[in-house]
Length: 103
Image (cartoon, rainbow, N blue to C red):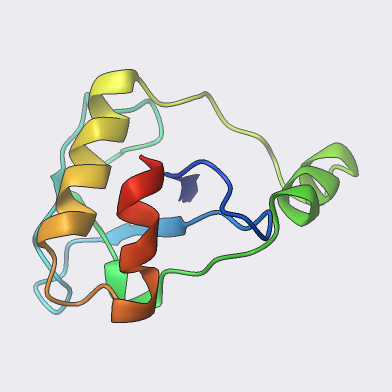
């Protein structure tokens, strides 16, 4: 599952991170547990090292064309938790630190 965690930058791009199972091999800066979101079925982590920055209009196009399922939105609290994790993670590529100003 992917999360858009920033507003668009000057180029219309957003910061997107994904959730993955916590198997002990990934960054544990942001751990999600059952109850944090309806899609969290077991302990998971945000995989900051694989963050991407697509154009927001491309993300919207994919959703609008039903190429992915748009899941239940995340709570403000979970969004802030993931954003704060991005700021703390040693694995988020430096080129994405500019998005901290867009949280």
